[in-house]
Length: 104
Image 1 (spheres, rainbow, N blue to C red):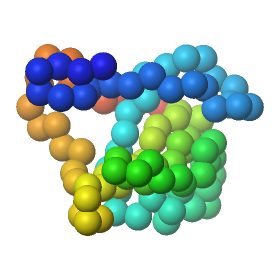
Image 2: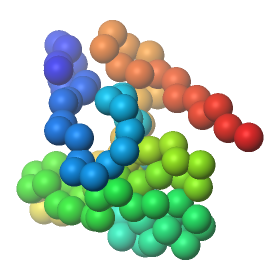
Image 3: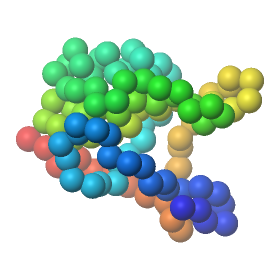
């Protein structure tokens, strides 16, 4: 999905074997996707989709915290391998401006 400012959302097929209902998932920018996926696993969470590359977009993994809340960790990329930040610091039409986790 897109707005006049660019892409704001996408649709993806549910990963095979992942037991969760359809949901909107947040993306958290990290410096090292592989290390962060390992940190989730070592911290009692899960890695539902191991790190993979999307050419011209970046590297990402689908992880879950120890209580099962899923999210993507991602390092964006542009031509030449420079990283891009996922910092949507101002509410704009079509963008999620607040993420909240309800947990014990």
